[in-house]
Amino acid sequence: MDSNQPLIVKTFRQLGWIVEHTHQLGSGFPDIIVSKQLPSGHKFTAVVEIKDGEKPISSQKLTIDEAKWHSTWQGELVIINSVDAVMDYHNNIMREFG
Image 1: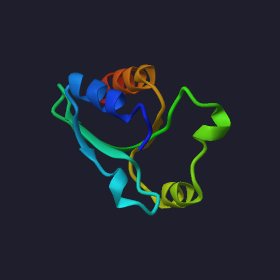
Image 2 (image 1 turned 60 degrees about the vertical axis):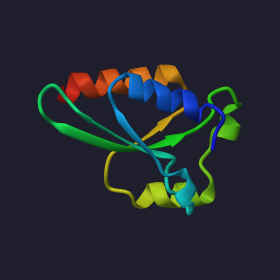
Image 3 (image 1 turned 180 degrees about the horizontal axis):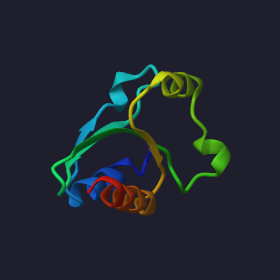
């Protein structure tokens, strides 16, 4: 678990997202699953890989297991490395689907 995960989870929740922790599943599975019912009525779900944006870019690379898992996933998948990235993602989803 990355050190910024609690703050990222808190931010998603403050924006009305439901968050489930999945980092303990291993085998490259992303860190959390988020979902939100948008004002349009659309229910939106995504898997989220959390990386620590305070670390150098080289330290934020996907592990071999993560890269393999990501390459086969066919649903919504996002890599988040900061609170600003959560806000950007939330705003994009609201604009596109809200």
